[in-house]
Amino acid sequence: MRRKKRTGLKIFFGILAFLFVIVCVIGVVGYFNVVVPILKIKSKADILVASGKTLREVFKKNDIDLVKKEVAKIQSQYQDFANESKLIYWATSIPQVKDYKNAVEAGDYLLKATTVSIDAIYPYADLIGLKKGQTNFLEKSAEDRLQTAVATLEKVLVKVDDIAGYITEAEKRIDSIDPDRYPEKIGGRNVRSEIVNAKEGFRGIVALFVDAKPIVKNLPKILGANGKEKTYLIIFQNEKEARATGGFLTAYAIFKIKDGRMAIERSSDIYNLDASIEPNHPSAPEKIRTYHINVPKFWIRDSNISPDFVESMKLFNSLYEKSRDRVAYDGVFAMDSKILVDMLTIYGDIEAGGVRFSAKQDTRCDCPQVIYQLFDLVGRPVGYIKENRKGILGVLMYELFQKALKSSPSRYWGVMFQAMFLNLQEKHILLNFNDPVIQQSVEKMNFGGLISQVQNIDYLHVNNVNFAGAKSDLFVSENIISTTSFEGNVINREVKVEYKNPYPQSDCSLLRSSLCLNAPRRTWIRIYVPKGSKLIGFTGSQMKVQTYDELGKTVFEGFTVVPTQGRTEIDVKYSLPSTLSKSNYSLMIQKQPGKDKQQLSVTIDTKKVYSGNFLIDKTVK
Image (cartoon, rainbow, N blue to C red):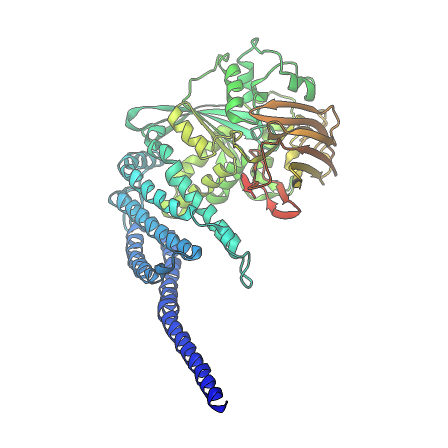
């Protein structure tokens, strides 16, 4: 018995010893194949992070030689990092390791795109002020600078296809990374949301270099290169009096550009344009007669009644073609007052038409001085005729363009480009071109103000039109609250819109020549949802609720008045068509152009998935 017991113990300890050896072997193998590579990768990554911070500072100097040198250094460091990363690629059967491999490869393609971009610009950097010690560009006039930039563009853009190709390869790899594979948080770090944000940020790069490629490649053509003059209609939308595509059409200008030389042919009040088509004004559409006050005719200034900018431009042109002042144009740039404020913020105060304009806050309206000054010039009733009262907008914009071109490229041009790109994303600038190739690219970039025709997902667009005449959108804030709930196979939706105006009413007396900025806002509301949705209830409308189909959507329409120093709310409940299901549910919410005081809250199946500023179109799951 003792012998058997000793034999059993020997076998037991033998097995333990064997297991210990196995664990040690696994530990050693794991250490050298996992721990050591990860430590080496982290070491290389730390070097890259430090170099990335340095590169960011170098970019601010706009010295192409410094940028080229720093990028070459990073490329070498990145190659070391990528080589160390290959040591763990044996584990790509693990999804997270596969994601890591794709991310590393995507980074390599982005560096290649960066290098090609710099190499394309480098031979011409001195011409556009990106070489230290070169002053010939800085000494040029504003017109000569733009002309030089246009001539240089054609030479640089030959590499756009190569750059787009590298970015497309990077996009394939980034797209394969699934944020849902990762926990929402590790410690205090929001891991999943960081991955989502990184992917969304990368989409911006793709949009700029791939989706916008037709625009980029046609920039010389757009700017009238090779002696082929282009004519553009600039429309100013006053977003402080909200209309479907952004704001009340208040003024317009005709710009001509040839080989980069810009000239303003005409800058005028929209009322003058309306007067030029007398007596050919048709009767106002039914919606204007219903919600506006004493407007029996269809005026150009009221033509942007469709939330789809392309459709509104068709209505605009149906009236514009009757005008004695009509000028054929190649494209339309519609912009609101935020562009003026941003440019004045970047370049400082400016004088136009004998008036000084500034972005500084004005206590008379709790808004930038340029806004109050323009309202005072064009909106205050006086006992005499103001000649071309709103033409000042075109003069101001032209002076701002001239100041931008005269400014230091290294100090201002990058900031200006970022600001304008952001305004395009936030729909403070809308584009429409006659050239179908360029227009297609504009629409793909979501710069055309279209109602999106998304398929197989939920959709929401809230459109508010101010038919009061006062500029109360300067004071009114809006909060959109979207809720999705699931009941079996039925998807129910609720959309609340809260309107608040905490400011007192203006003195709107014509006799006292008062400046009428704030008054009760007469609000025509349209809620665009997936076609086939069924209305359950609509509360808060002061007129009969309408339901119809338009622009590929079902529309729920109502009307309310937002009082000064008060609030109001609408609440719309509806069910989605059976073609949409709970599985893989997602919701696209399109922002109305011109809005900058909107908040958005989105809840799906009792979980709040977004809450914050509503500045750009959003898709949430």
